[in-house]
Length: 404
Image (cartoon, rainbow, N blue to C red; front, side):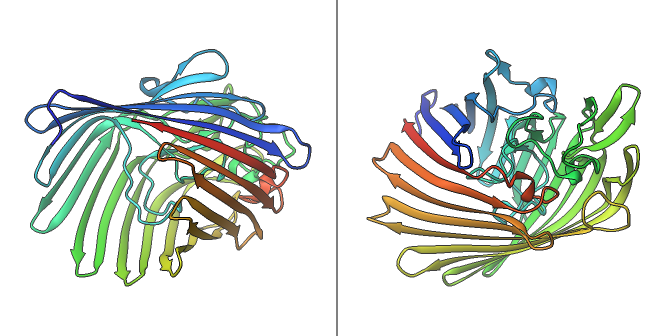
């Protein structure tokens, strides 16, 4: 047990550099420094503070600031450096009960990166899918209570912070180009003046989980502003607005020897969407999301993760296909007493035929130093989820230092 009043600190530093394969130009240079402070207080109370200092140059910046609520806005140190609060919480815990107040994130899905029920938090999309951990959740100010009653685990959360998904700035390497993310405008068309109008409605969620032998199941409801915008015509050009929607979902996972099976399903009866039109037009439609995945520990240090996700929106005239089918496959093999790891990830849109292949190698030089290198190879048409970045193939290297 930690000594009351003692502050524990740690720092992780990431240096990342990427070079475009086609033109030998740098398309990402970034330095991330993330200090973390933890303090145990008396009577079950605990404080946590995590910061991120980011500095970026070349063609990949730090993303738009327009989607941040004023309460969560990063501190800017010039044009290329920011300090942001990742976590600032005061929590109380007793037995199976935990109450957390402050800036935080929560994960309610069981799949790896596919967002089916995991739609409470806003997400960073400034580099599309070319990051290690997905989704990259953005913390928001709110409150959360977790407790157990009559064999059921309850998780109740609410936030008043209107921060929405963050995207790359137009003109940056990973700025969205596909019509589905631009109210139907083709990739070559210039976007009109955009005005972000964040919602002031709260986001509320309740999740109930229960274990049945080797099975773990949950049911959840999320109500609040969608973190993905719709485009609407306004007197000043085009407004990005965040309408409320209600998600009802369920998750299931089961351990079976070396395998873990995972399933998620969600229904949104009032999903705000853009429609094909000369001016931005919106409607509320029924949306269904389903995802199935398996984790498999294979012999000789080999690990596999395979997933299939289906996203369907009803009705005609959408700016995107009515049904998206995305498959993912990740393979990892550890060598040399876990100091060396070989990896490969394949992401593909089966309905559009585009995708990305990401081989990598990681070497844990010491307990505090890790070196990673890899390739990001992309194919497809400009209107696809992945194909919109088909000209961004790159080779990259990352150095991570951890201090505690």
